[in-house]
Length: 469
Image 1 (spheres, helix red, strand yellow):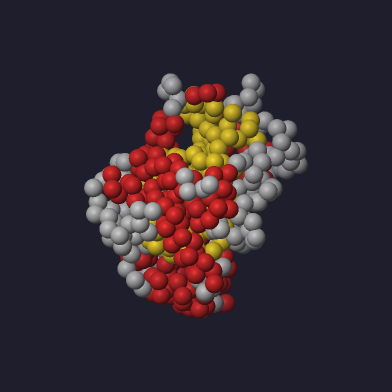
Image 2 (cartoon, rainbow, N blue to C red; image 1 turned 90 degrees about the vertical axis):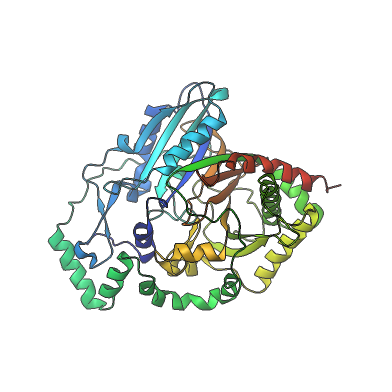
């Protein structure tokens, strides 16, 4: 029997619309060696490593009549060259040109008749650099605990590790009759699933409400915050099908200095930097900003234990637990120190009152996980999420040592977090090898100045650094 999609994975397929494609992305920038990491090397590397992620040679097959959730089947016509593509930037190969390419690629939905991923090798970057852009549907990988193909190609040394060669013979694709027979068998074993599956496929929130009950106890304290409507901001509008993308680069040591001086965490500093950047961005737009103004962020954090950032890690293990918080960022506060203290207090209060949500609960809720929030797991959830928070901020610590692909050293890594319905901005950041790298994904119409917001990150960080003796 082909493996059936989980309720969470299926929800990402059912919730996808033209304005909200459900893929996560990443942009890795490499220093190109004299030989290695050209298109042929990348295809060869994928062919060698793809056995480590067998899902990447499978596609989604729907059950007739939606009598059961879809299944994963081997793609009989799998062609790695279709998924691994080649692009180039016009000279001089600027970061702005790369960001525009990323925005165009992320605006396009994935082909649901094939395995739900794409990878692009981008040549022509200035200073002898090459980029690898990945797109992976959230039905395949949650971005935190599962292994993404963009991580599989990475090694901890310039010498690629040896992966045992495996002969792949695709299993025959099941017929509609077999899928229906297996669906009937599931219905006999679990009679309630027929009604549930039809409703979920139709985007009915009621269908998933029963599955959430088990997790509501852990979410009760968060629900109290969520019951208060999110502040009105220009970040919550009807969005289009097109995107804009911008990046920001900062040094991890700066965050550590501020953390030590003010007795907080690196995550507190990150959120304070974002609050300061959002404040200055709102002011640059002429938006009304008062002393009480705030922007509510949904903040899913990778949890590793005592340390804010690990000293070592293996490629492909960016964390296996996640906690989520609703945090009101004090954009109306002019003092960077007071902003930091407000954020640090809010985060401590979340932790002390048990408002963190464990990864097991996030999975059960069917969509209550970064980088998007679909509360109660139905199509109506996008409208609900617009009410309770203004934007998503994901922060995933990465390894603090260099990684390589086909001998090329990875210099930087920028996440691309998808937008939820009615939300014009999502911010992702990753710490890697001494740097903290931001990716700003915005709606093309609502965020024409997303690059301005990204540029204000340095200014906000400098404000906090100025308070360190």
